[in-house]
Amino acid sequence: MSDGKPVPGDHDGMAAFPGPRGTTILIRNHELSPDEVTKPKVDAPEEKQYDTLCRGGTTTLIVGPNRELIKDFASLAGTYRNCAGGPTPWGSWISCEENTSTPAENKPGAATNVSKLHGYNFEVSSTATEPVNPIPLVAMGRFNHEAVAVDPKTGIVYQTEDRGDGLFYRFIPNFPGNLQAGGVLEALKIKDMPQAITKTNFPVGKPMAVEWVRIDNVNPVKDTIRVEGFAKGAAQFSRGEGIWYDNGEFYFCCTDGGEAELGQVWRYVSDSSRHGGTIELFVEPNDQNALDGPDNIVVSPLGDLFICEDGEGEQFVVGITPQGELYDFARNAINDSEFAGACFSPDGRTMFVNIQDPGITFAIWGSWRKFGK
Image (cartoon, rainbow, N blue to C red):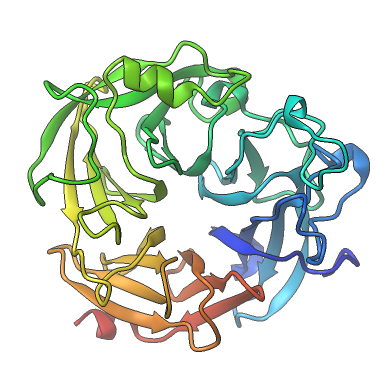
């Protein structure tokens, strides 16, 4: 890269931001564990690493109007399995750790030992020109984070959890736009349906009223936030992964949800009171040829959802129309590695997407409007 370090491995979640002179700034996650020593790590000076025993983090890429790479460098280092995350309206990327390791779990000689608690979100400014100071956003919760999406009207951050018994969360900041200033963490509960298990037996297209339960212990030593929330009536979502905001609605994936465990996409619609909203199952095809392991998600300039698959065999970027019709948009013709990090340039003309292994970032462009017809 431009900073003299090798490009790190395991490309994952990503977002695009406007840069000066028509450039696009990409911030890209690297889902690296401490034991993945054969792959280049996200490298930075020790004082800029959250945990020197960990290899994950983010890189920032400056891409010109002609879609040629101008500059790339490490922007967050020393974190554990940065899977996905989400962009903020104030121009930053929230990178999420999908791991809750603690130093107390260290074993002599083990390759996965850590020096600090993990399971946090970290914020990376799109204007950063060097590795940021890695400050964990503790108030947002310590759990198996996957992705986040921000409501631009309220500043509330919605979060998914990649566990079979994971919950769907929202973080209400004390000061919108300043996540380090703390706030309140809550989990979604389906009204009149306490402790709902949403993996199966939910109809498609039926909105259900929701309420929110408060999480008191947001920074437990053990991975117990979802246990507290479920005990208070919160609903379980099986392996919540990618989430994206669009026009007052949040779409999020459950990778192994559904009768066939091939995946679901849910839609949450917030309300003006901030107390409730509705949630509904948007699609659950239960057909491997239609959708297999939905992971990262983005809303395209067409208004369709584009979903990165992380399933078995061939992997696709799958499109879903507003009416819930599914189609294949792109196929990984290289190997069986997952797609990840689909996002669009600020002008909506270019789609960027990763293949995780061996680590390739693609730019895709064409007549999106014509394609939408």
